[in-house]
Structure formats: C-alpha cells, structure tokens
Image 1 (cartoon, rainbow, N blue to C red):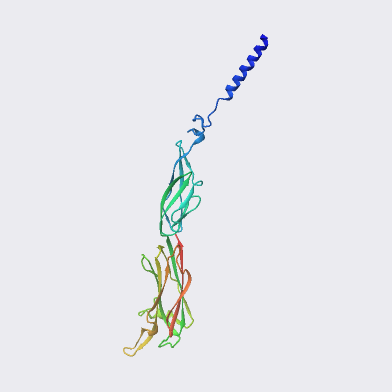
Image 2: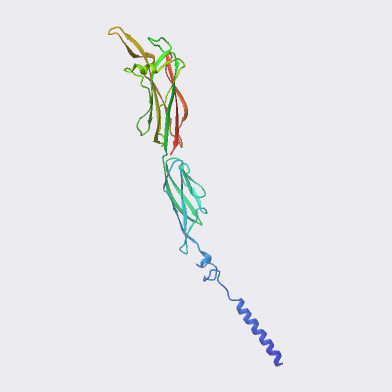
Length: 288
C-alpha cells in the first residue's frame, strides 16, 4: 500500500508541473500587452507620410515625386510605389501610379499621395513650354505673267522678304532679296519668266515660349519692279508695277495645348491676276 501511494503522488506532481508550463503565454509583440497590439517590432504603424520633389514642371514635360512614410518606431520608409497617387486637376497635370507627374497646360494642380490611411499633398505649377522655331524660305516662283517695259511681258523682277513676329520676341528676318532700286544688277538677277523659280537660302532659328494664345506670325512681302526709260536726261529707272505694288500677306502659327499649328512645308501666293508669285517655306517647332 505504501509503495503504490508514492507512485500515484509522483504522477500527480508531474501532471501539475506540465500544466503550469503549458499555461505560460509568450507575447507576439516581444514585450507587448499580451493582446498582440503592443508597440514592439511586430506592430509598427504609419504615423505620417510626406511628398517631396519639384514643385514645377513645364507643359509636356515630367517630374518625379517621392512619398516617404514615418513609422511609429521613428524609422522612415520610401513608399512611392506602394502609395495611391491622384491629381486634383488632370487637365493641368496628371500623375501615374509611381508618382511621375506630367504637365499638360500652364496652371497649378494639387497632387495627393495616400498610404495606409495617411495622405500628403504637393502643389505643382505647370509653366509654358519653350520651343525652338526654325523658319526656312525655300523658293519663289512666278505664277502669272508680269509686264516688263523693256524686256516685254512674261518677265518679272521680284524683290521678296520673309519675316517672323513671335509673341513677346523680336522680329526675325528670315530671307530678303536685295532687288531694290539703286541696285539694278540685283533686279536682273531676280528676273523670272512665268513658271520659273528662284531658290532662296534664308533660314532662321529662334526660341519662343509656347503659352496658350502665343503665336508666331510669318509675313511674306513681294514687289515687282519695271524698267522705265527716261528721255531726259537719258536713263533707265525702276518703278513698282501697279499690280504688284509691295504686296504682303502672312500666316499665323498658334500655340495650342502642346504644339504649334500649321507646321511643315507650306506656300503662299502674292499678287493679282496680272502678276503673281508663290513663296514656298517650311516651319518646324522643337520642344525644349
């Protein structure tokens, strides 16, 4: 009886010890409050986020924003690719899922980054884009017959000029012949039969700001001169033809949302039914 009681008592003690060991909890937070929501490494939260990067961009260009989160343990994490990005004015600037902002038209837009219920904003100003404009005068062609007192009909002595007038900029002389009174040799050089062409070599490249409403007006001017015999004292002088008396016209290239209108190879015809010339030119706009 005595030996059997000792064995039962030892077994009871082992059960009690085992129960005590299995009932001792270990905090998942490593020193937390026992419910898993402590401030240990297992439960770091986002305290705030901030958006950094440039505050300006030109229309048609891009700039990168960065979202950084400050954690509850004092550390900082870049969460640019995890954040949700939105623009309050997509007509002015857009933003993609990685925080890349694209300027659309001049103005301002508020960009917002959201991450784990925290938000931050950055105001972006979109400025007008600068363009390098190249205008080239290429050729002048006699379209209709012109009177020539000495040489007979069907010939014209032309003086031409091509100029550009950009908004907010100085006048640019693209091409100008020297066929004017006082230089009869140049008038002979610029003599054109009907359907004949004279190659022009003038070109000019200049910078403009492509703000909405800004323009580059290209003006074309042409004059047809006639030889006139003077009896006394005997001489020859140059006079303007009445049908081509310093005729001019212009084409205006206007800036839109992101480019200029009317680019490429173009032509314009000047003069009346008795004397006409056609000017060929080209214009390109390269964003800066």
